[in-house]
Length: 412
Image (cartoon, rainbow, N blue to C red):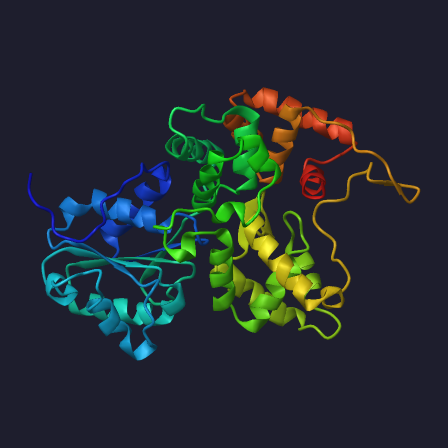
């Protein structure tokens, strides 16, 4: 077998899903020279990039070279030198390697030096005609010629497959969680690969049902000491993203945490403006910044646009809001979904109707934004059966719209 040039790490775990992203990235790299994989922290951008690079190694005789910028402390003026002489490359300088025809450079974790990496990549591409650059970042590099590919959370099927695979590694020979418990747990983890992998480690001491009922940062911080510090808990990732935001974006992040589910643009503006808070135009700028930073997710459905925060991101923002004090939150803004009709009657709380375990799992998946077909795939049931479950939940809770289930689940 011919020796391949490059420095990609040897993988020790299986790769699950991402067929769409791999297919689209290959097509883009065939015609374009700069591609950036963007998405939330822990979303699997690095692993996707290295798997993609390995699959394309034969197309790049000059080598596939990985440079991790996450631990670099390079100032803007020294980015080019930090990238070229980084220890990840070893004694062979990257500059020499990239003189070869057709090379692929992976610039990993560019978010803290996005603008500098953009300028560096642009300059490098102008000097080397056979080079392609694949970057990973929570936000775009913001240069001409950049092609963005969003790396979204895993779908229900892939999320369940990833959890089952990591669960087998965490507890060899033990039964792998399945059914409603697994579906509910993956929904709570928002399909984020790092969250799924960290939660699987928790199976050493708890069942899937116990994990789903009590997910917190301490549990999701039980990773191996060999894992980079930034990946040992979801709290580390949220804190890193928070540090990259402007003060105004941080403030809006905290205020948006009051939404338990999807919210529309008008609700976001109401949450961030009014009183001594910024004007609506400034809120829109800050919201755009949070979307660029992969803090706020944009959801386009049925010709309308709404937004949401992943569970961990929302929880981190809520902690920052509490630090500001309750007075800083101002009046609670309305959410897209309405409160359950059974929640308050004559000023007193009525007991919520009891759902079966299967209905609880379906409700969790509805809150996570799964379609009826996706719910069926996750639970191993038909789409028609999933639709029946949703209808029964709505009847039990007295709801007239599916979206109300999200608010009920979030408020339990």
